[in-house]
Length: 102
Image (cartoon, rainbow, N blue to C red):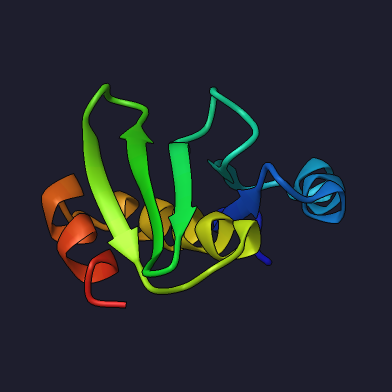
């Protein structure tokens, strides 16, 4: 990637963090395991209908989300996609609307 590019990295994955260390461009973290992320998921709950969680954004905003997807990896991937969407200008509410459809 070019040095003037942007990279989005999972704080939940050791290999992703190693790639981030080598990346020279603007870096964004997202995931479940680091409170210093651009986007972090908290209060993750699973039931027979899927998962619910709170997406917390670095600016202090938060939204409740739900999905029929299962697994911690799904929430981690949603955090990454949400960080990218947020950075290109979508609001947390718009992001939550999209998540609630999957």
